[in-house]
Image (cartoon, rainbow, N blue to C red):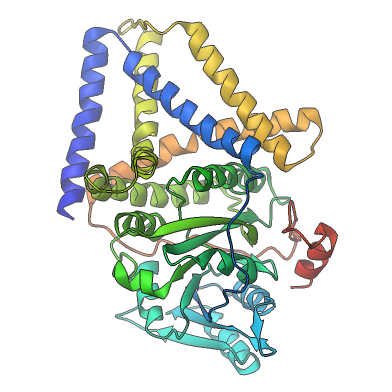
Length: 455
């Protein structure tokens, strides 16, 4: 926590220094330079997968350990039954029996979650429900997961959110990446199942199933820092024990675990053929609240791991990619500084100049637009103008991070040690069928659609 206080102070001094320098020197090159650099970094991550995703994926389907599935749940009556039944339908068996167990961690739910789970537990042999009552309950997802480890018997621990639906071959495909002793974790491909419900959910679908997906592929290709996600992650139990379990002080326990795996020498792989779906947020204010929580956790990871990673003995590629992944969380704050300069110039408070020619900024913007268009085209076959609209929606959608990181910084200033389970509310989506945009090889999309619609 001392790192958080020092890191927070450093970010505040850095931002204040940027503002003072900009207004005193009337120069905004440093803001534009940062934007250019991270834009090129993002373009590289997207285009790397667009042009080189055909590479051979190393995996072993004969590696088939017993898997323990953990589902932290708190007031999830609208989604928990569909999630459990979806997971139970996975085709990961041995001796004609499921080769996995499902452990739901009911964190003192006050709705019908407990009743639904008790009914399911009587029906499903490999399902166990662990009830967490106060004072243990309510201390966050990481705390629930750490207690869950003590109830597991599997060699591999899988974590799913309570609003998840999975492809029947999810475990079979994901576990195959864990055969290498150096690999500590695998992340599946997340998609949004209510993308047809609203424009906001649709743009989140593009975020997860296209841009995050392609970035993860590129990171996996170059040997960079493939990130674990909060949903659809698999980790070896030995790797979890080596890093001391999940960090109970983190609100983004997934990325925190990624960095600790990296520093301990464990590798993380990305499994694009291990597909799962989750519910997209359909309310802008709930989405902002979710992203503020994520941004707060990422800021704390920036405070905790930047210096240790800088002086670590990991490969140059991992160190570079890891540092860029950590540092880019403060980029929205720099964008905010640029907006302040722009507003100041508009109202005549001061004037600014830049030695970076406007044509360069225009070219960078067009390059980013083109990369996003190619990414969407690779993953879908929409009409031309529909793809243009999707690019523009996603472009403006990302501005939410300016508000989210700013809000996270304010929350850290109020109480940098704040840790609580500020979970996303799940409504369920009976009114919106699961929309399949891609499926693992060997199963037609139409067949997969039919299977998941029945859940």
